Image (cartoon, rainbow, N blue to C red; front, top):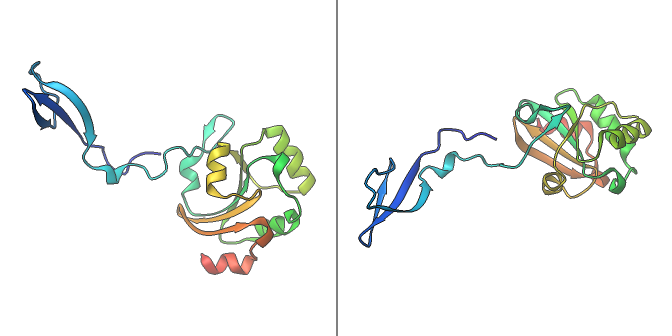
Length: 168
């Protein structure tokens, strides 16, 4: 993720027991470097380790555009399939959002799973730890509106289309 503006740094230096702060690195060799501090931390990215990709193409920025219904599958082996039919119906019939699957499983494992569940959603890969941070259940369901989480559900509580569309 990129910062919302250019990061500004300040150099903290010491000379003869006194601390000094500079916007530019001093050329005087009598200063001893102590640390470099960001003076505008509010522009740093809120999420720093999220990456979404498929076939060596990065889709992270696309994730935050428009309305997305995310189906999170951390690991195929640990994924409960009891509600996969309900999830399929919601994902296929939702008019105001695009459904994406995010998984940390291999492409082959996900393809086998999606064929068995009869899911035809676009799928992308994300780090397992990040997915577990987003939602603990597998599958989990997350609704984004321009990158802001506006709904999150455990697979046991799969939302209805009406419920999701009322949030958009």
